[in-house]
Length: 324
Picture (cartoon, rainbow, N blue to C red):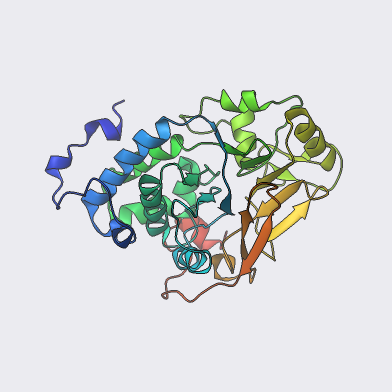
């Protein structure tokens, strides 16, 4: 089957051409033009396909967790912590889209910054950057409502190339979900994952997107029905075997926006305050500064947004049953 990216002729899509290098003042307006969105996605696919599944960087940066289409809260992070820049790098740890009703705006701004700052702005795939979740929880419906056509197919192609994890200064591993169902996994195993696909129902790729920590030792059955839950001993063994200090993951709403588990060796960060306009939680982000990479947490409250309900574009079954 021919890929959407292989069938697009931008000359047949009307609008003025994008500049070779977009400016900061333009980046938040990119979603407004159909042609711009296509150009951004095509360039993003080229950038992401050149990255490994586990990206190693030596830097200090700000780490944000789930955004879930809460565009105005994401902008508030930039107000609090400064816009992304060469001297202010960011990493967003998956689940950029779904549930919130400005997922298109969120993802195109994030992609715009990745194009502007390819070595200083980093994106990790979450379990919601997948076809099934997008069909159920609103992103596909939102894309069709705002753009129509085959745009969703191109988003799917780009999502397939998002890296699955980052290793910071050889000491901190960041992934969206968590650790794996089997013992003995190495960083080289993560680097070798063939990620250009929809995630399988088990295996390393699935675990990085879906697993959760638990207080009990060992592993447990996942409350989500996918992957597993992993205890403090699993975390400790993984860190020791791979020469790491701790892991950062997201994937779970936390009342304070973050939580430290497993003796501080497993940190959850969640950046969607008042999740789905009903949870009342704070959002948070982490600042990591060299050389020690001791995490500094900043909490923030939700900001006002236009009167559009969350899940406005979700599958009708999900809306009817209030499955947020």
